[in-house]
Image (cartoon, rainbow, N blue to C red; front, top):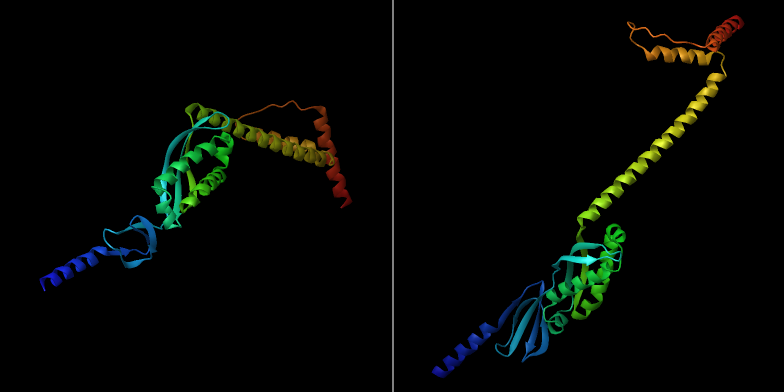
Length: 256
């Protein structure tokens, strides 16, 4: 009787110690005497203590940071770049059996791929096509990590640190570009204004004395203060224009 009680206690202990809970976002890779035997689905499961071992694998999206790397671009500019890698395990068996630490392996391989890809492009391309370059890095990393049972979802280039002298050069270049645009806009404005002045001159020349009246209006605007006196030397043609305008108005009234 005592032996049966002892055996029952031992069996109960073995049963309790072998109970495992696999969460919904996990899978349990079971090794029996060191060999892969099965993959347990979410829920309550049981493994034989001392004989079987269960390694849980998280299937959620993981993130690893690539620390800042000093990389030399194709045009020999040293830049500091850091990035983030988003990935998930899609084959738990491979993630456990084919690589020692898949999270660390993904981080190291992504770091090396980043240096290789950035080293083959110029600085201007790096600054203007950041998303395209990140996609190229992802493709390079995905080729290798897929054999580990890991799928790389996104690689994002976070910061690009430029040398101080390069920042000054780029600031001067941007300032020169802004000045260039301002000069072009000002020249276009002057060209349009000259066209409008030419059209106005044609209209004024078609009416006798119109140019003289325009001259009087301009003189009136020059000195709006009545307490001051301004003397203008007007040419004889101006007075003749006034006479022509008066005669034109007189003839027009006579015709009416």
